[in-house]
Image 1 (cartoon, one colour):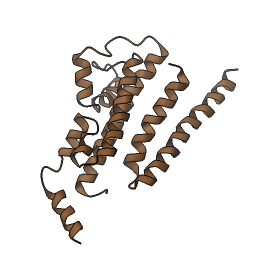
Image 2 (cartoon, rainbow over the protein chains, first blue to last red; image 1 turned 180 degrees about the vertical axis):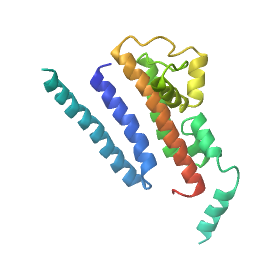
Image 3 (spheres, chains in turn orange, brown; image 1 turned 90 degrees about the horizontal axis):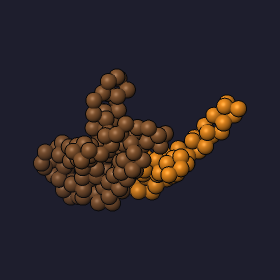
Image 4 (spheres, chains in turn green, yellow; image 1 turned 90 degrees about the vertical axis):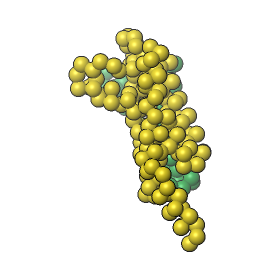
Length: 56
Length: 132
């Protein structure tokens, strides 16, 4: 498994639980879950590029 | 009005901490007890998926903590409830982590435990009526 695949799986599972437990209506659960997923993956990509430039 | 009274009666019956304990022992069971089938199935699939993925990545199940980080990781692992104890009984995750992916797997298992605790507390909130 690649590291990026691990990031995607982690984000998917964690976002699902966050969405269901942190909001009350199904519509808001889905929206919050997608929001968390995007933040997880986006933060991983941004931090990866930051570390790439620091290491150079 | 009648629906609210019916709901109040339902929330007052039985042991109030049962969904919390069941949800901790078996991922999603707390929601299943409250007849939240969809939410319970998604929570169970997510937590079980993360735990199994962690083991498949050769992650470690903590057993003998030596420092504060090990103790915290063990607490996270214990959040998996029966999954942790069954894994230990089967000797899963007992090897020393030697790869980077294995280290990620260890974190997957810890986070699965923490997510399971969140799910169990959510079931408790549903049971007490704090959440609908």
